[in-house]
Image (cartoon, rainbow, N blue to C red; front, side):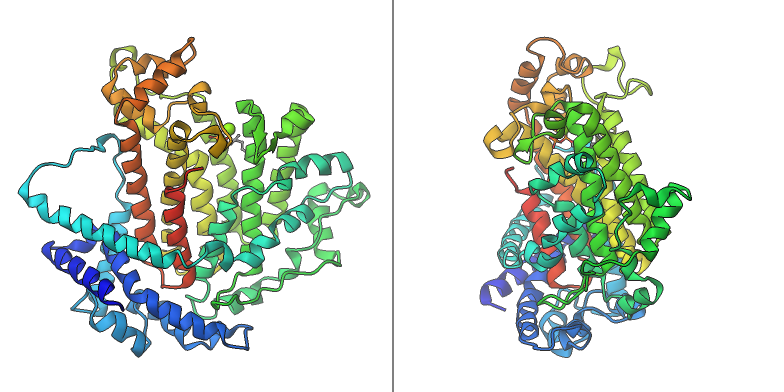
Amino acid sequence: MSNLRKAASNAIQRFLDYFPDPSKYRPLARFAVENLKISQSIKRNSEALSQNSDNELAYKNDDFLKASIPTSHSDYTKTGFLPTNPQFRTEIGENSLFPHNTHSYIHKKHDLIAEWIKEPVIASTIDLKKPIDSKYDAIKSFEFSIKEASNLVKNDINKVDPFKLVASELGGLTDNISRILETGNPKLSKVVRHYFQATGKQIRPLVVLLMSQVVNGITHNSSSANSEKIDYSVIDKSVPKDIEFDKESSIRDSVIREALSHSLNKNLYNPTTNSNGSIVLPTQRRLAEITELIHTASLVHDDIIDGSDTRRGIPTSHQVFGNKMSVLAGDFLLARASVSLARLRNPEVVELLATVIMDLVEGEFKQLKNINTENGDVTYSNLNSPNEESFNYYLQKTYLKTSSLFAKSIRASAILGNAPDHLVEMAFVFGRNLGTAFQLVDDLLDFTSSKKQTGKPVGADLNLGIATAPVLYAWQEFPELGELIKRKFSNENDAETAYKLVINSQGLQKTRLLVEAYAEKAMASLSLFPPSQSRQALLNLTHSLIFRTK
Ligand code: FPP
Ligand code: MG
């Protein structure tokens, strides 16, 4: 560890000691310091691993991974994310932040972090002004140190490229989706593949694949246990294209039966370990593809609802093929996603992803209104400022529309990887907080980014009648926004007036603080998983998603 790192972690240690229970207050700080300490070791060990010529399933025999990813549930719960490798432990253990480095201490620390993560963020109380009190001087310096530490961590984790770690799975994503969408009807084939000609951000499959790598191997023999239960060859078999197949039985039965009996002439997915020893199971790779299918289906429908002209730099589906065909294409994408989902042969995962579809619809439905006028959130007498319910309505909509797909698909990847229950839960919480931070950034960019950067005109949400977090915060300062929000900026100049009020308010800065509140919780939940390059990549990705400009 360099002197700079040592100095930074010592400084943070001193500030952390100031608090009776620092882990509860600043889990991210602890995580930052842990990362400072382990990053060098991870780098060294992964270099050693990449020189290992026997690449196939090398992770099973590698000392480092045995050390850093506990091999059994009990091992993990005993040690938390502290590895058992003596060399590794000297580096992060003996000089660690936890002088009483006993199992129960770590256990307690994890419980406290988990408890803190689960505490809800109260959006309506976000305040730019910190209380002026000498008691908070230490926090100020503390926060400065955290920032420094985060920068160091950031520089370090920037060396882990999230896309590179799952390059083989992401590289095959479009081809696999194209195969899933094969039909005997050339026109339908064309319409359903339209959005896949251009590459989107692929964030959802990316996080699913990375979380798969994070959890695989935590539970002893998870991959072999799964392979006994699942015939992976089913996953890649094609759905019948010819209607003749369906003549003698119900369509549903024949699709499944055909899938089971049809021999596949294209290559099946053979999971291999990547250069840092991580593996993605075939079920998890297919899950990643399913998330992209569901997401794309929702975009096809969303573009019709929003009347958007372009998506991913190409004309929208309804612009090219019209509304009727596009609605049906969206339905078809969902239908094929459902068949693929059933083939994962895991009812819990099927249920999770089925409820995501439901959530997407409900979220979009909620978005048709800005404020809850049915259960009394806003009446004409209290349009002066938003209340907690106004923020809750917006955050619930955000969860349904965006976070649910992140949360439930990441949870599903942990289930497929046979992760212990508390990590399955943490995977969900990570996804939920990441998804919310991601959507909040989207809502911010609507005010701050140009069409050139995002492909969307500035203030597009306002023009669609939608009031997002910056508007709700601006409403705290400008009561006149209430009426405009309620009538969905439908009068002439409403959108323009609202835009100006938002820009002249603290709305953007407050939304930024809200983004950070969710991101901090997302990052803290990662700290409860064993350290690995993939976990670093998820941390890095969280960081880059909240600082993105498009
Ligand atoms: C993009 O939002 C849209 C969504 C995140 C979800 C849309 C959901 C539906 C239309 C419900 C139907 C669902 C399915 C599965 C068919 P946005 O308009 O804020 O983002 P954009 O600027 O990228 O269009
Ligand atoms: Mg839209």
